[in-house]
Figure 1 (cartoon, rainbow, N blue to C red):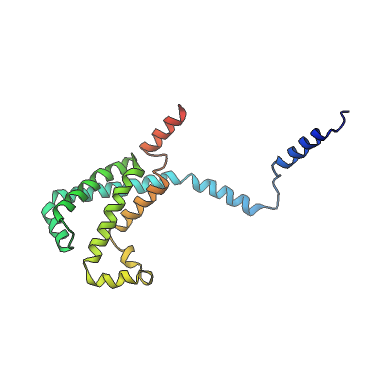
Figure 2 (figure 1 turned 90 degrees about the vertical axis):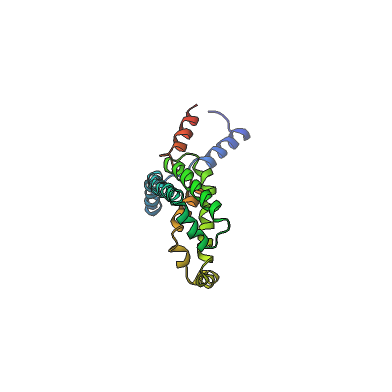
Length: 184
């Protein structure tokens, strides 16, 4: 039998300290939660796909409507007192078509969400600030969030923020590119 040297004792102590703890049979709650979290994580990409496809399509459609009904949209922008309404309609329409189509397929998703966020923040404030009734509602936003939640641009804005932060998921062109790059 080998004599226990200080080095051997140190190795044995380190090995015992780094050994993973055994699962305790009484810890059913954390085991259930871990199992549930793994199950829920599998649904992130399909959910992001559904959100991206729906909002991307609606964005592209909205941009198309802006440009095909240009003068009507310019009149609406003038009513909301948007500065340079012709330029704003053209810029908003092109942004929504291009970024909406890219969001739909999930290509350059995080990057294209930046102009979308800007577009929908401007849409929210220009429409709501043009109405004097909304000035008071915006000042007391925490007492009445309906001014934001019921705004038409809210789901588009939240989707752009969601995709900017979480990405498009693996069911996207970005996801395919990431998978292929990881394989190399």
